[in-house]
Amino acid sequence: MLAGTAHAGAVLDAIKKNDVVTCGVHTGNPGFALADSSGKWAGFDVDYCRALAAAVLGDANKVKYVPTSGQTRLTALQSGEIDVLARNTTWTYTRDTSLNLVWVGINFYDGQAFLAPKKDELTSVKQLTGATICVDSGSTTEKNLADYFAANGLTYKAVVFDQQEASHQAFINGRCDVYTNDFTSLASFLTTEVPNKENYQILPELISKEPLGPAVRRGDDDWFAIAKWVLNAMVQAEELGVTSHNIDDLKANSKDPAVLSIAGAGDDLGRFLGLSKDWSYNIVKQVGNYGEVFDRNLGSGSVLKLPRGHNELWMKGGLLYSPPLR
Image 1 (cartoon, rainbow, N blue to C red):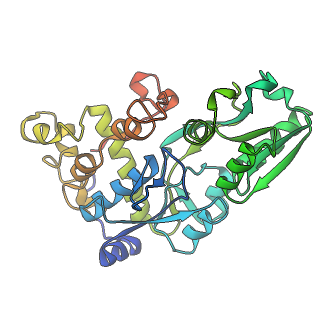
Image 2 (image 1 turned 90 degrees about the horizontal axis):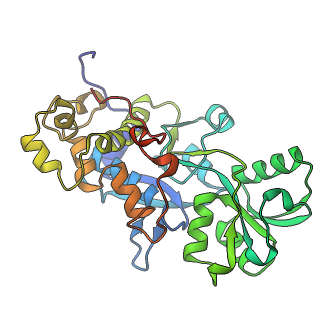
Image 3 (image 1 turned 135 degrees about the vertical axis):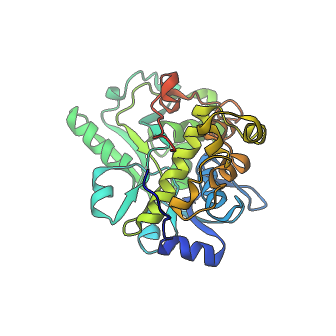
C-alpha cells in the first residue's frame, strides 16, 4: 500500500462546505426510494445515499434527495444538480462511455420481465406477438423490448410514458396488455399498488441483464473513489459478519485486522480518501452492511420479501464481491 493522504476533490469540498450530500433518487419506487407522508425517504437506493453521507459527513441524515425521472436522472447528474445518482439505473457501455458519467459498481443485479393478467393464461414472452405493451421512456427497458421482439420476429405496439407512475396507472386501467420493467420493479408494483394482485403474474423469462448501480460525473477521481469504496465497504462488512448491532463489540474485542479496519480501530484507511478514520464505522453503525440494507428494504424484513438471488454474497453462491479493504 502506498503511503500518503488523498486530497479532497471538488465534489467532496462542496459537500463539506454545504454539509449535505445531494443524491438523485427515483420519484417513487417502493423498496428502492419512496418518501412517506412526512417527507421522510426510505429504500435500498436511499440507504446508499445515507451511507455516503455517513462516510463523508459522519451523519447519515445529511442528505438532500432530488427525485428524478427516467428522462431527467442523467442530465441532473451531468449538470451538477446532484452529486451522485442512486436510482436503479442500468450500467451500460453507452452510458459509461459517452455521457461523461461513470458507474461506481453494481449494487443490484436485475433483469427485464413482463407483468400480465392471469386470465390471458400466458406462459412465455414469446406469446406476446401483437400485444400492446406499456413501457417507461428513457430506460433500457424500451430498447431491450425493441431488440428482443425484433430478434424473435414478434410484433408489438408500445405505449410509452415519461413517468413510471403513468405507466402503472395505464396498466391498471387496462390500456395495455402487459407492462414491462425490471423484475424487481414489477414485483414492487404488484405487491404495493396493483388491486387484486392475485389476478396477475410476472412471466418467467428475463429478456435482459440489468446491472444497477450508483453513478457519478467523470472528472473527479477522488469523489469516484469515495462513492466506489462506500459501496465496497458495505459489502465487505457483510462478508466479515460486521453489522450495525455488533460493530461496537467487535471494535472493542475483535483480533481480526480486517474487522478492526472496518470498525475504525485498525489501520487508518480513511486518510487515503480524505475522510476520517471512522468513515466505514459510521456507514455500518448508522446504515448497516449490504445484507442489512437488502433485508430491510427488499428482503425478509420488507413487504416485498424478495430472495437475495444473484445479489447474495459470492461465498453463498451470489455475485456480490468486494475488493479487500487493506
